[in-house]
Every structure is written in structure tokens, then in C-alpha cells.
Image 1 (cartoon, rainbow over the protein chains, first blue to last red):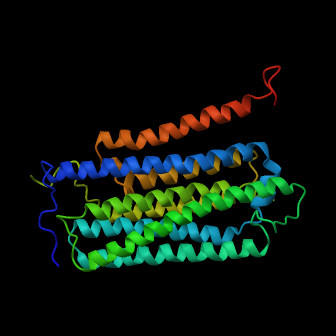
Image 2: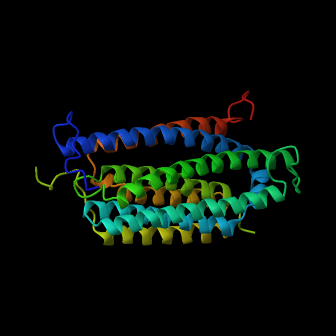
Image 3: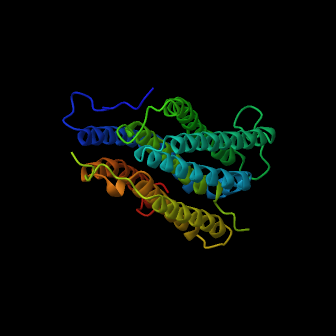
Length: 215
Length: 104
């Protein structure tokens, strides 16, 4: 399979117009994602404001080391995906595949570490289900915190899974030589999605994990 | 059509690496600052750093800085909406109890 020599769809005047349309369309989608995550963040902000003590106690139960590592992993994956776009733009097929695979690996590591965190939290009965247990004066507030925590990180993890699935397919296409300087929009648009999911985590991390660590 | 136009932004690898370095520094900063007690400013600083990281990612990794103004408007619209939602909602909660008769 060789690179599509003309990635230009017939209803566009030129490739720049097509790229602009792709970019605008992707950003509209990302705006809807901002609204989605924004809703959860707002709910969190309201209850953080109303129950500072309970939320601080609950936050201290979260694993700071694992989550900091995860933040680092995601930042690295944003770098690798940006470098993948660059490789596609400059016709470096081997580099493109390497960077896409690196992004895949980093994304999977993120999910793995998240899984370990969740396992820990389930073991400590921190999931707001029937077996919820919390040692501290503000049990109901802690329960609320964990409800929001699992909602936000669960939604984020779901977005990661979607991203990784698409990335598997794109990596295969890249390996087959489908992308290049004449046809790299798909990689760039995927990059936009991936960076957005990274940004969502960049906010989740301080909001949930870093309240009142100064002891 | 030449490749010297607005939308064909091929950034040098050094730019990406520099932005990455900035992001790592901000990450270290955000974790370190969390261990000091600045009172209410802890959250302000944490949010400010998060916004800085998001801005770096958007401007350079997502190429916003090199995109058309129309793209800026689309991206900005999302965050503008977010700001309105937060300002009005949190404004309500923060103002409760300050006017006689409103439950606080």
C-alpha cells in the first residue's frame, strides 16, 4: 500500500481548505468534550467548596506516587504523538510507526497503573458501593468524594481506551505506509484528541490528588 | 499551492522538546508546592499551574498558536463557556449568606 497520492476530497477546493475544515470539526468535538468533563469538574468544585474537610481527608487516601507517575506517562505520550505528527509531515514512515507504537505503550502503561490504583482502592473499600468503609469523621463526604473520583477517572479512562483502540488501527495503517507529507491530517486530528485527554488528566490530577497534602 | 501557508505548520522537534521540558518542570512544581501550606493559595497555585500546562499543550502540541483565528475562536468558545459556568455557579455559592435572608 502506498501513500494516498491525493488525499484531497473532491468537495474541497484545495488541501489547506480541507485541513482547516478537519481542524475546525475536531475542535468542535473537543469543545463538546470540554462540556462533558466540565460538568463533572463543576460538581466536584461545588462539593469541594461545601465539604473541604471531608474531601481533604478522602483525597489523602489516594495514591500520590502512582498518580504522579501516570501524569508523567501521559505527558510523555503527548510528546510522542506530537513527534508522530511531525514524522508524518516529513515523510519519515519508520519514525511515525515508532512514535505511534510508543504512544500506544505509554497509553497502556497509564491504564495499567490506573488499574493498580483502582485495585488498591477497591481493596480498601473506598468504592462508594454497599461495602464502602472510611476511617475519618466525615464518612458521607468521603463517600461523595470517591463517587466523583471514580466518575471523573472512569470517564477519563474510557476516553483513553477509545483513543488506544483508534491508535491501534492508525498504527497499522501507518505501518502499511498510508500516511505521509501529502496525507497526515488523520494523525494530526488523532493527536488533537489525545492531547485533549491529556489535558483532562492535567486537571484531574491536582484537583483530586493534591488537596491539602501539606501536613 | 506551495507549502508556505497557515495550515501547514511543521514545528521543529526542538520546539516539542522544549515544551515537554516546560511541562515536566510544571509537574514537579505542582507536586512540590502541594506539600507546603499556602492556605487558600494552594488551590489557586495548583489551578494556575494546570492552566499553564494546558496552555502549553494547546498552543504547541495542538498547534493552536499556528492555527487560523477561526480555530482560535472555536477552541476559545469551549473554554469561555467553561469559565462562565464556573464563575456563575461558584459565584452563587460564595455569595450565600452575605445578603441577609439568603441561606448560607
